[in-house]
Image (cartoon, one colour):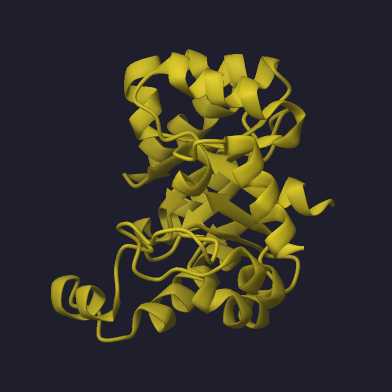
Length: 232
């Protein structure tokens, strides 16, 4: 896989036109995009079909977290849009995760299921004092990754700090997707557990999610190319 193919650009826009303008501007440079609540709540789920028709591979970042039957139905319905992957919270528990896996396993088009471990906006203090989890964010993320692997999910979304431990615990074939990726020259914004693309690649990340460093750049094409070059 070429380095550029390991980057997923986050389409965190408030309207369809802005998102598609960026996609068209980046053209063949970018094949993978993340679409989440922010865009879906204004553009509707039809935006998924539009992007797939443009030949794009879509990470549908829904972070599903509900009772097993509801999540199973949701992933089955999302699969009909031919998205490449769907996210769900590992903290939803093994029954929920297994229901999601079973819901898609026999589909003609089976999206990958990626489990969110600990949001990169949370640090140790938030995990321990607000969620009352008596572990570090890193330890908790690795624990959730093991659950996701056991339930048959394809990978996890986790901070760059956990890549090596997750690979060691879950196997090299278990996908690790790293959000909160910031090139050395970009601002951290609201992310707390961040990592540079080069360091994430070095540690073994399979995919990197990049957002504002590209989407808010004066020249998104140059910004993306600079990021890929830095990580290569």
